[in-house]
Image 1 (cartoon, helix red, strand yellow):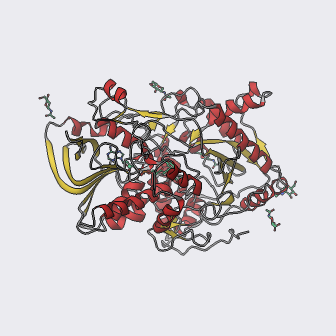
Image 2 (cartoon, protein in one colour; image 1 turned 60 degrees about the horizontal axis):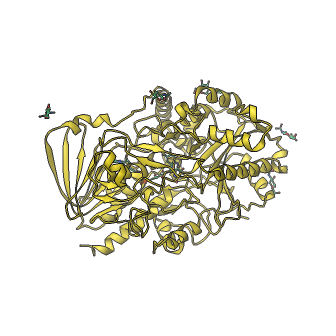
Image 3 (cartoon, protein in one colour; image 1 turned 180 degrees about the vertical axis):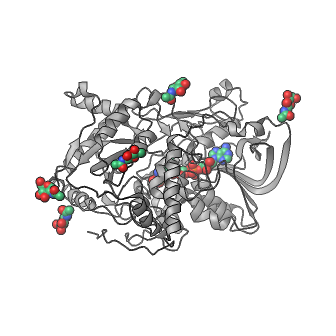
Length: 608
Ligand SMILES: Cc1cc2nc3c(=O)[nH]c(=O)nc-3n(C[C@H](O)[C@H](O)[C@H](O)COP(=O)(O)OP(=O)(O)OC[C@H]3O[C@@H](n4cnc5c(N)ncnc54)[C@H](O)[C@@H]3O)c2cc1C
Ligand SMILES: *[C@@H]1O[C@H](CO)[C@@H](O)[C@H](O)[C@H]1NC(C)=O
Ligand SMILES: *[C@@H]1O[C@H](CO)[C@@H](O)[C@H](O)[C@H]1NC(C)=O
Ligand SMILES: *[C@@H]1O[C@H](CO)[C@@H](O)[C@H](O)[C@H]1NC(C)=O
Ligand SMILES: *[C@@H]1O[C@H](CO)[C@@H](O)[C@H](O)[C@H]1NC(C)=O
Ligand SMILES: *[C@@H]1O[C@H](CO)[C@@H](O)[C@H](O)[C@H]1NC(C)=O
């Protein structure tokens, strides 16, 4: 067994002078209250004047034009601009990260800020039933760093069999053995992981948040009693329980904007243009992508690409941009009055990771109330509850139904302060469900378990509302269309029930706190849980697969080197290209994909 509980003392990165403490105290207070009153945008009207402008300005010519400075785009821009002779333009709709967004525990508040696009799902019939309008929140980062600038920073690569499956589906080069070096390349690991699986000296810090809650020890002991070994889940064996590895550095968020782009931006051959909306890829009669049209809040531009245009706008916006440019399902584009250039299944097969937050346990352990001042002081030393998301310390993976890959992930969040209000708000719970949940959570005592379905069978879809780039796309999550997904979740719930019945949890008097929903079904086990799951499940904000890679134009959008089928000089490089669901989170695999394709591109163009 690995001894993962050693608390490593992280060196002081910032002098915690009184003024700095006061500054962060004020900043958090102010931004928390701003989040409470934030009005989500419902369209891209901030760019309306630019769109309506009658003059189109020429923005010049670059070797590579990359749309989106998110997890993939930041890495690609960084790696391509390592070649002096390449001229790279990176276009990003959002702006800079700030001091508030660097505080890991504040990540849920960023959903209610201009660093999030502001999407919600279309009203659902099988899921999101406890949400306002039956709509789930669909958070998407809009900043340098993209979704990695607002995400929960968990570093979870996925399972070796996931990537081997990509090869089975006809995408050579993506086996686990071939992608592992790219995971390692990015990483500057501070965790005591399995030898041979982690990188040192890469751009991206991966570390534990310290100290952990004393309850993590109960979690590990209980896991062992459930035959779940304590593992480095990014190492030799994923199945088991482990301490969460985060993309943080000295307790601060390490988005790809910070880790990769911040240094690369100094290069003369990389231009980063923020606060611009790309509205169209111009594809000529030879089916070659030549130009990108984009707008600022007042002007309209076009830019030429000499070598390639690369869409890294994410699994929702890259499909939107492709469809606006004439690449997508023929009948849908026709109904939107868009000329069809290439008929491809863009936006179809939306995969997600449903997340059920409905398991709460109280014990006789009480977190002693810490003040904001103490939290800030800890944070400035790189320590304490402000350095992790929602108090999460532990994670684990189990298999159900004899699958080779884990099907259920469980996140273990001991009490870590007063976060329940922003949690329920972020899930878009209706007032009734919000009250029911808030009444049951004791901020100083309640352990929250988040269950994640890693390989759901149900599929959603991204479509256009109209041919106007100012309109948000439709996101139809369609979770739990397949009943099997409910059954898998119930197996996860049963595992957690048994985990909390082990001696390790008995000895602290662990008891489930039932949220009073679906009470009328209390006597019908399967129906009861089905109802609770459909009420309370949101996603973990992992859309993927909407521009999947594969050899076949009928079922995929890009080929194994991520070139759009049938179109020259156009690639998609982001979480949309994953051809399967993954047994992990998406940030690390997205960065891996960008690292690998950067090498592919450098080889193709022979550094010239
Ligand atoms: C709240 C939240 C929590 C998450 N938690 C985790 C976690 O803990 N661990 C994990 O591994 N993953 C997590 N994820 C998922 C992970 O962050 C994403 O899957 C990953 O960042 C996706 O990378 P990407 O490059 O595909 O897209 P993104 O990082 O979203 O990048 C797309 C970029 O393109 C820009 N863009 C889009 N359209 C346009 C346009 N038309 N013009 C110009 N720019 C445009 C966007 O503003 C954005 O910056 C989370 C995501 C969210 C939202
Ligand atoms: C653009 O042209 C249209 C039609 O000629 C005109 O109605 C509109 O006012 C013009 N817009 C601007 C911003 O000049
Ligand atoms: C529900 O949807 C309607 C129509 O789309 C919208 O006007 C209303 O604001 C929505 N309500 C909430 C609470 O989101
Ligand atoms: C977990 O198990 C170890 C080894 O048996 C024991 O020393 C430790 O006290 C246990 N921790 C808790 C919280 O029960
Ligand atoms: C929790 O935060 C809310 C505001 O979000 C506040 O009203 C409440 O007093 C806080 N509770 C505790 C125990 O700190
Ligand atoms: C928690 O409960 C257990 C078992 O009932 C008991 O032995 C222990 O002393 C309690 N701890 C606290 C802090 O109350």
